[in-house]
Length: 426
Ligand SMILES: NC(=O)C1=CN([C@@H]2O[C@H](COP(=O)(O)OP(=O)(O)OC[C@H]3O[C@@H](n4cnc5c(N)ncnc54)[C@H](O)[C@@H]3O)[C@@H](O)[C@H]2O)C=CC1
Ligand SMILES: O=C(O)CCC(=O)C(=O)O
Figure 1 (cartoon, rainbow, N blue to C red):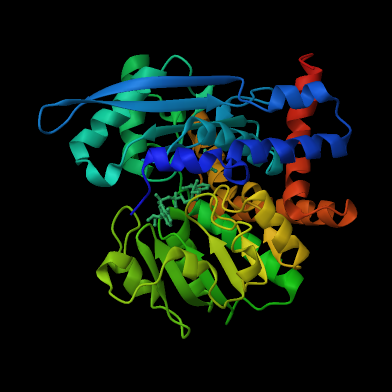
Figure 2: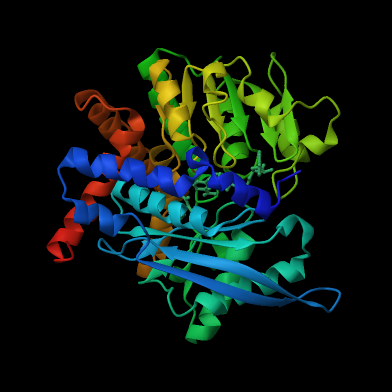
């Protein structure tokens, strides 16, 4: 079962698992490498704005339940802030802050005119009805409406949120604003101004990074053994793309356990059986744990679920020669160090998972211009951006002799730091 929020907070206290502290450490290192003074770090170590909201929702049994939500806006020196909203029982304030910093870095890496934002609500949508989820989504938008908007801060999907939730949120914002405002949020259904390719964009971006990383390591993706942790939006599309490319998916997982087969799993069958929260393992008896999954024999490992999965405790046991982070924050700093020392090519989250926000940007541009592109046009634009970004960071890592995570942070912070300087903030 998923740990409760108190247990997760206790885990967060442990220095190495504190995603905000470790993000700050790498941001500081990146700024120092680039020669920026301390005040730039002081500006970037926290979101410029953090809002905590209490959201009352009438539940199906007629009781009123009060939920806690957050919206963090890291830095708007480059443009409006942007990033997803997570519905999960383990959401914490620190996590949302770190996630907003990662969004700023992603925008810098793929060169979008945004800063980073992120939201979260402490709830378990798997235990809520459709109607309760609608009430929660609308209540959240009412609570944060003053600080968000198409030119201020633009939400999107993340863990356990989807296009239906984006549609309710867009509708609620449009009612408050008194006109139809599709550019308020991305990841919407196509009929409401969503973009072709957004649903699979994160996985598409990860796939492109895997192909590039595999070339560097001399691995052929066709026939490669791949393990994917998480079978939701990012993980399931990714497993399908790689399966169709001839890879052998030897392990997949969800929050309840993992499935493995050294001869390769039937991904089409599993996709057919998964539910809307990316749960599939409950249907099987011969499951293994997520911990065992990460240590399976494979060529490519893709954590595509939650943070703090590869740590000092298991990094030595990882068998893959390439680790590509589809999830946000799946590897701790100690885990990163151990993988790097072992010569494992680690493609960091802020690069690997940036395909999602890239196509969200395309969605926002299409909403703003009222003219829509084809799936082929979106795909081509995404490919160009991801390949250029991968090579930029790989080359930075080689020339500056730093690991891929530090290289990505160096590329990610630079534009934001320059914009803040020109504005006269630092
Ligand atoms: N959806 C998007 O566009 C983007 C998602 N990401 C990141 O990718 C990761 C996955 O997100 P989505 O696929 O969108 O979420 P999702 O809600 O569609 O799926 C989450 C998957 O992770 C599994 N999971 C949840 N808790 C787990 C745990 N403790 N251990 C193992 N598995 C667990 C769920 O069972 C499900 O299979 C997250 O870290 C998210 O922040 C990053 C960029 C964009
Ligand atoms: O699509 C977006 O705007 C944000 C996606 C996101 O939340 C992420 O990359 O972590």
